[in-house]
Length: 151
Image (cartoon, one colour):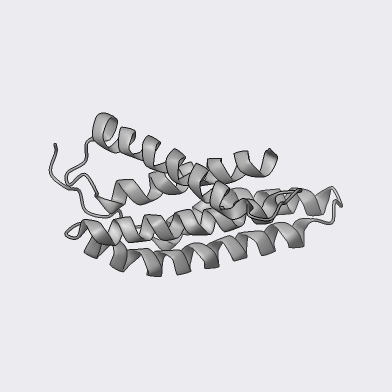
């Protein structure tokens, strides 16, 4: 496995460039008089603030998680619990006692696929490296939330 790379620094200019497509869409909306430009810009600001907060939450988890596997496991369990609640909130139809079934199905899905990816495909060192485990678990949970909410 290659030596661990340092984090990639993102400058203010790069952040502005990343926001350029969103600004272009808002300008097109304004020119076409669609009247959704404020929603587009508000959504962009909201996403920026959420990602900023998430960055502050994940930084210590990423730092501690490289040495302590249990930190990563606890955070992934927390993510699965939140995903189960979110799945139920998005469902059109709900029945009493649904939460344990949703939690079990998401847990099996995330654990099985995550273990396959981490131990068979990526093989990071250490295996519980939060730089890989947490984002992949988040993607798996996002797909699971969508699947459950559509069913």
